[in-house]
Amino acid sequence: MSSLKIYDVQGAAVGDIEFPEDLMELTRGGTAVHEVVVAYQAAQRAGTASTRDKGEVAGSGKKPWRQKGTGRARAGYRQSPVWRGGGTAFGPKPRSYAKHVNKKVARLAFRRALSEKIAAGAVCVVGELTLAQPKTKVFMAMLDALRVNRPLLVVVDRLEDKLALAARNVVGVELELAANVNVYQLLRYPQLVVSRAGFERLRARLENGAAK
Image (cartoon, rainbow, N blue to C red; front, side, top):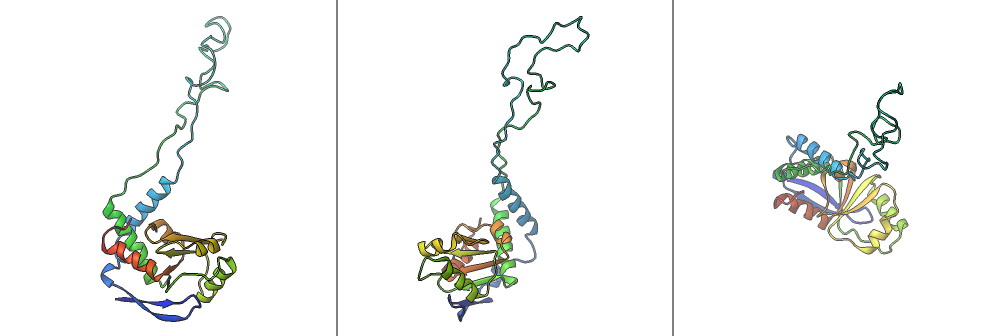
């Protein structure tokens, strides 16, 4: 069993929480992590780039000049891709960049990413992530007491208004529900600040095979 310290919002250690060794994965899953991150980033692409082909460019079907006798190259229509203002040949059209990732691969990637964070000591577990006031100053004081540096990911089991309001304007801090944390977020942020309930939820995702 791996043991992690539990802190209060003042930065004082108040206990320990166990993480089963059989849920840790540090020997395999590197390729799975890569596949999941590539699929996540691909899914963020809008895929809205669009160009007009020769059939969509405005204009008549009249020949610019007669076929022979002018000394110039023959031309059939002004919408031709070889003309300025004409259509685009093989240009982009709206499409989806989504990639399919096998569920087992996604689960392995999540386990590997979370295991690396725990093994590196980059996970700070807080008993209760609650603030007395919805103020950024109070939130920053908590981070200073916990001795954590930005950028970081703050993970909670359920979202509280005071915490959300206090953290929303802090650069380098992202607040996320434990049920929605993904592999990209685990890799993007060097440190995690997790509520105890949030950490239990992350562990449950591994135990019940519901990791995404």
